[in-house]
Image (cartoon, rainbow, N blue to C red):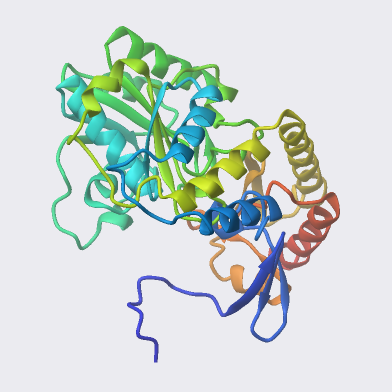
Length: 381
C-alpha cells in the first residue's frame, strides 16, 4: 500500500528511465512520450545540454538564499527580458507560484482588487490561483473561494466588456486554454481585450505556463497575436523537468515589488537557474524555433490527413506542438488503450485528447504516434 496521499489518479506505468522522447517502465516496456510531463520536458527527457549545465552547477553550489547575489539568476533574467516584452523578472518554483505572484503584483500596483479570468481556464491549485481558475471541479470541497475573481466566457468580447468596471485590476488568461480543452484565443477577441486594458488602465496578465518556451512555435504564445502583456507567467518548459517558475513584468511595475513585498526561499535556486539558462539558450535559437514550426506544421498535416475523417473525431485544433483532438464522446477510457500500445498522451477536459510532444520530436516519431492514434480512434464509432 502506498504511503502517498491519493491526490493523483495514476495510470499503470511505473517509470524506470527516460531519454529524449522515450519513457521506459520497470518491466522494460518503452513508450513514445507525447505528454512531455504535461508540457514540461520541451527538450525531451535528459537533454544533454540541460543535464551538463545542472551537473556543472552541482559542483559549484546548490543554495545560498536570495539574501545574496546569484549571478546565474541575472543571466536567466536577461535572457527572459531580452526575448520578451518584459523588463524585470521574479523567480519562484512553479506555475501556481508564478500566477500567485502575478495576482499579488497586479493588486498592489493598481490598488484595485477585481481580476477577470475565463471559464474553463486553469491557473493553479493554491487558494488564489484556484480562485482564478474558471472550473468548478477544481474548487469543489474547499469552501468559499477568494473574492474578486470574475469569470467570463472565453472568446466572447461582449461578456468581457460588460464585466469590466472601475475596480478591475487585471485580466488574466491563457493564449491557448490547456486544461480547458486546448482552445486558442481568437485574434479579434484578444485585440479587443488588449485595447480595453490600454483604455481603462487594466493590467494584462498572460499565463504562458503551458504555452511558453517554444511550445506553440514561437518563444511565447502572445507573439502570435501582436499584443504586449504587462505580466507574463512562466514555469513548466522553463526548467525542462527541474522545478522553476517566473514572472516577467513591465518597467512600470518595478517599484511595487520592493524589498519585503514578496519572496520565495527556493525561487531562483542555482540548480534550477542552470537548467533554465541551458533551456533558453537552446530553445530561443532561431534555427531551433524554425525547426519547431516545421515539425508543428507536419504534425498538424498528418493528423488532418489520417484522423480528420474518422467518425469519432470532431475537430483538431491548437497551436504549434500543443494540439487537441476533440472527440464525439469522452476519452478517459482511451488513454489506457494508448498506453497499452506504447503511446503516452493526455486528456484536456472530458472529450479532448491533448498532444504535447517534446519540441525535439522527429518526423519519424510523429508518424509513429499518428499511426497509433489512428489505430485506437478508428475502432470508435
